[in-house]
Image (cartoon, rainbow, N blue to C red; front, side):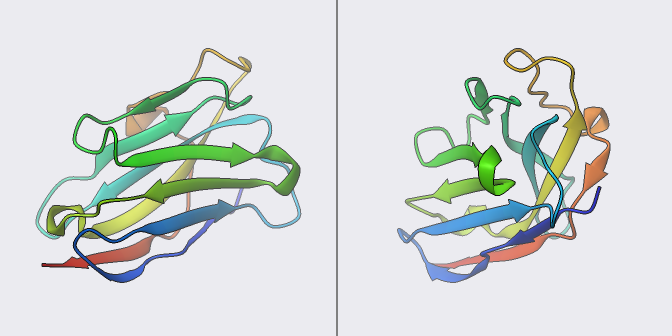
Length: 127
């Protein structure tokens, strides 16, 4: 499973970006999906996750109310809408996929639960 994250860039504090994660030519519908990020000198951390159906989601407290995860299985794409960005959101953002038999109840926060990872996209928020 090859995932590709895109949509990162440089934005001023308070601005917005939308990240996308796609799997070229193949379906993502059999996977729970997640976003993680890693800032320089820090460990990778959970941002948000979504079940196969898209019905269930989880969001880290640090981004709750500002970031929204969604997916479009028909387009084999997951999104992360990021609003009210802060300098502390600066990081490389990675998308990941976890094989799942559950459509609605599996959307893990732990990186170890994910089988496949994209290459990452840089998000830089200037103050």
